[in-house]
Image (cartoon, rainbow, N blue to C red; front, top):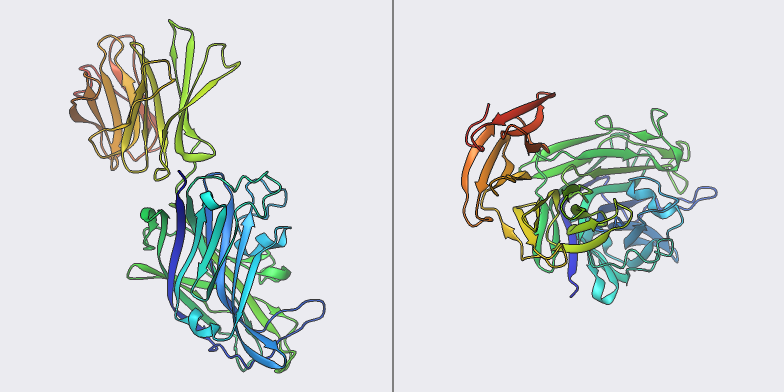
Length: 464
C-alpha cells in the first residue's frame, strides 16, 4: 500500500518595498530577459532516496500585448541524488544544471495572493506516480519520474518526503524611485510540516531553538565581497517573532545592468536568501554487529541507507564474502538510528531509536522472520543493549536528557528493573558498553572531551 506524503510551510505578512507595481515595464538586458519585478517563496524537500525538490510560488510583472500585469508563477525544480551536475544546496540554481523546471503561469491578480501569504506545499503520491506543487497562487501536478533519467527513476519510490529548508528570492527595480538602496523585503515563515496521509510525523515550529543555517546568494556572478555569495548577517536579519521567523532583506545585493536612469532600461537588483535546517530527520547509516561463534554467523543491523524508515538485518557465514538481508521493521513515520544487534540463546535482537521511542524486535529462526516491535517503556534516545551472557539479562542504556541511565530485564522485556543513573550531565552521544572478564559492566563515553569509563560491579545498580 502506498501513501500520500506531503511537506509544507506557511508564510504570511509579506512586506515588499516598493509595493508591487504592475505598471513597471519589463527590462530586457542584452543577451538575457528578466522581469523588473519578481518575488517568490521557496520550499525544499527530500525523500528517503535522497532525491530533492524545490517548490517556488510567487508573482511576476509581465508585459503582454502592451499591457503590464501581475502573473502568478510557480515552479518545481528537481535535483537527483547523484546528479553529475550537482550544484550544491542552493535551490535557486538547481534548474540551471540540465534539469528543466515545471513552470505554469496564470495571468492577472497574482500580487494579492502572494503578499497575503498562505501555504506552499509539495505532495507525493507513489501510487499514481505524481508529484504536486501547491501554492497560494496556483498548483500543478507532474510525474514523479519525469526528470529522472540519470538515476533510472529513483524518484519513483514509496518513501516519505520531509522539508529541509526554505527561502525567498526577489528581483526589484533599482532606479532610485521604486527601489532605493535600503530595500526592505520581509516575510514571516512558520509551521513547517511533513505528513504521511493526514498524520504529521515531523514539524519545525521555527523558534530560536532551531536556528538552522542561513545563506544569501548572488546569482549571475554578482557579489559584494568577491566571494561569489553574500553571507549573513551583513545582508539580512533574522529575528524571532513569537514562534515564527522573520526573513528580512535590507540591502541591494546586485545590480544589472550598471546603475542607470529610470525607465524601460532601469537596472534591477536580485537577491536569493535560503535556509537549511539543523533538525531535519537524518537518513542514518548507523550499523552494529554481533557474532554467534557456535554457528559461525556474523550479524549486522541498522537503517537502510536509502530509507531511514526501514530497519535491515543481515547475516554472513563466510566472513562477509556474501550477505543475506531481511527487513526487520518498516514504518514511513519513523526516522531510525542508534541500532544494537545482540545474539544470545538462539535469539537475535534488534534495538534502536525510531525518532520517538526505543523499539525492539527479535527473531528465533535465524533472521528470516521478525516479531512485532515492542516499545521500551522509558523515554530516552541513543539506546545501547548489552547481554549478560552468564545470566541472560538484557541491559538497556539510554540518555534521559543529558543523563545516561540503564534499565534491566531478565524476562525478555516483560518487566524492567530501574532506571539506574550511570552518569549525569554528560551530553547525548553514542556510547559503548560491555561485560569485561572480571564480571563487571563497563560503559565508555566522552565526558568534557575526554574518553571516560564508568564501571558497575553489581549488575548495573550502582556506578563509579
